[in-house]
Length: 210
Image 1: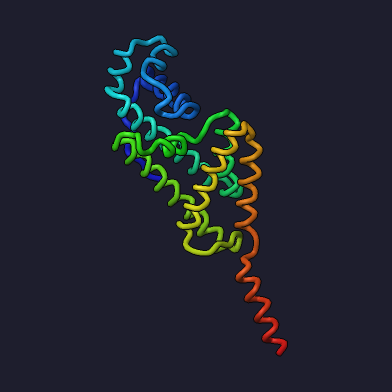
Image 2: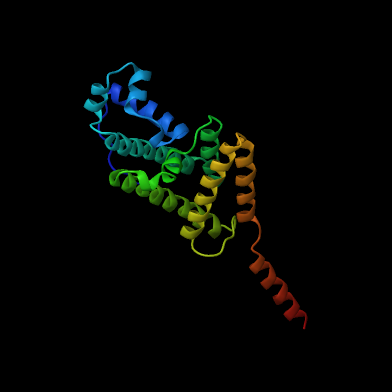
């Protein structure tokens, strides 16, 4: 995954981003203000503006940092001998059990109210995420481990949308297990033999008997 180069950040800036990330993941980007961050960190709002001139600037760097962290996690998955799709789903589960949402999934729900700089960074995150996932799906299909119609990118977009939606519903009910059940069902569907291929195999056998 390729993201915009992260700026060098001071310890104070990193603390600000950590608080902002938690607030955005639990309340939404429009659900907190600079005053909330300043109070929690015992900083003045002037100090926050020194590090991030506007909330839009803060939000853009917030997405960039989240994207960099997510990208590093995906790189670790590729180096692991385990199932990359299982590990990918686990990234979502780790966020949900902390009573948080995927930051970018949360921001996507507020997309129309976000400044253009954040909207562009948000699209960049999802584009890179989908390209990575499409690569894993294409590789798994070539090995016969998964089956799906259409292109790997279409399958990646479908899976991403389903997982983000499942997170929203699970958090609404405060039941992470709902997400896990949905995610497992999605993976099972990908691993199930294609009905088209199965039907074609039956027809070919029937033709051979004739």
